[in-house]
Image 1 (tube, rainbow, N blue to C red):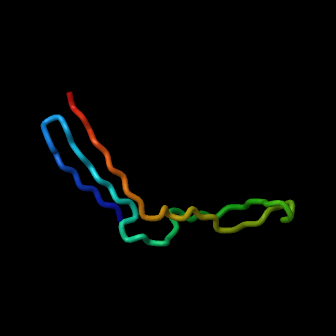
Image 2: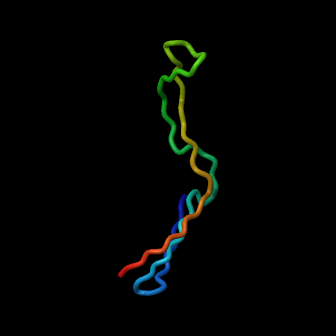
Image 3: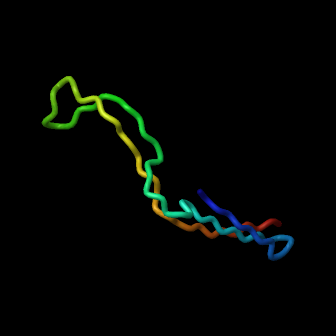
Length: 67
């Protein structure tokens, strides 16, 4: 879960704060199954589940100027 809050400080200025992985969940962003081969593994490779873990909680602040 992500969160965003914006505030228009002036007609020409918008401030935004984003929080990614709001609850700091330790999960995989994606899981997929395919054959791969690392050094020392058989030439035919090994079929296995590969994954990319989700990023840790992080924040982003931004300012948008309109002129």
